[in-house]
Length: 119
Image (cartoon, rainbow, N blue to C red; front, side, top):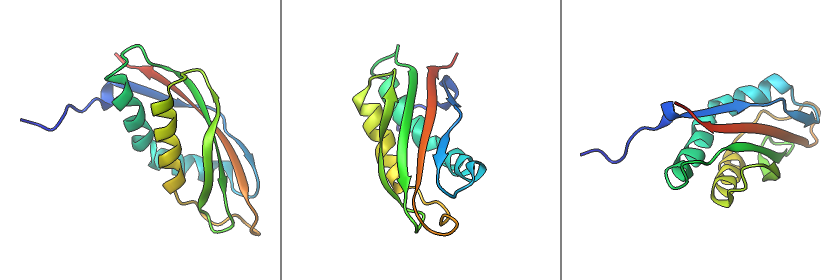
């Protein structure tokens, strides 16, 4: 027996247009998010198994410090209103590493994700 089914094909995550304040290029941020999209998908899929109708948009906001580390990550706005998914995504984002912003300083990112069950 397996240790669980792979549900990736059943999940659709669209990335909205991010808002970025600071000196990191939007494309660099998008690339890092794409590299980690499996973690975001995991957070949603796990909860989708418990709540089959779950879906909607979650905008996450995070702060990248001068070293490229995420110092804060939380929900800026949510239509999904699922604390387990939101907390899981915030936890994952806090582990991500970004390039150091040009000239130092911090970068504030607001990034929308739209979740829906595929089919």
